Length: 378
Image (tube, rainbow, N blue to C red; front, side, top):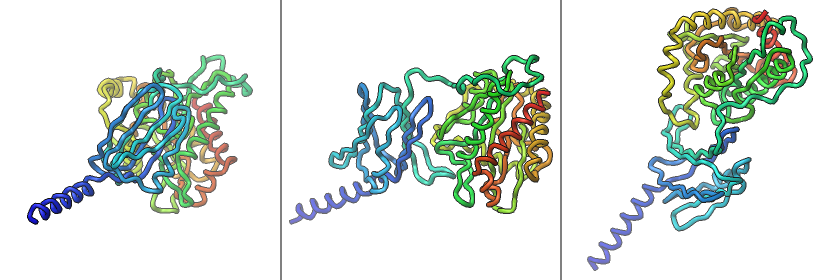
């Protein structure tokens, strides 16, 4: 009798420990970019997993897991790398089998909760074997806009940065509009205008709904030898009355106003979105250049570029700030390249949110930035 009681108590203890260590798979998300496909799972802390990679498939095994019904529906994702997904349960272990279109380099890691996500995250990245840091948009068609100053330049490269993307949705509007979609639409329209201008060429940091790290955007600008860097955003604040466009340039000391400091905090923490936080080995080199004499010229030119863009933006409506503001945005730290961040409007303002989602209004915003760039070069 004593042995039977002891056995029952042991089983109860094991079941209790099993339930305590069980990992719930709360959510699945997939993002595709030119260089990788990212799989993100929201999990409980202490997740135990393994990856078995074969020729053209890999199996992700998660031990002692519980798969929610709504999560299961999100598993079957396909793109240029993932051909098919199957799920198999082996006792308490879930096996997610991904059949691939080819062979890819697979990296995995876990991330702790942050301001955006309350769960721990398991991240699996599928990288192409030959990874390209930056890809320019397609070669522009024959120039349709004749610029009198074109003879004096040789294909000036304008780096256009569509803010946010993928895991990082950016600001959310009153009608649930996402900043990442609006900024990409405006960026593409601006790129088209630049590529139709003789002597100018546009490069986009992203062409779809995927995330690009902040320092990666800087490296894309350097790799393409950009002469200007323009980052496009649409801000949100608690007050729905705030309206109008504004332009920011880099301040090494941080935001010059309380509003600027709040804005730079929201923009600079974007690397928390499904990204492994690692120190950048080039930061020391970047900082050295930033404090060089070339920094002074870059800042002066950034101020001029920002002022020219604001002159055009005010034709569309009232400005939030009439002169370029200063903030410590990481994305503006492109050495020796004049760089500005354009807050096109407030997505938190219902009227401006509607305007930001309108195709014609997006074109007007893109044109204002375009004309500001042309005037800067003149």
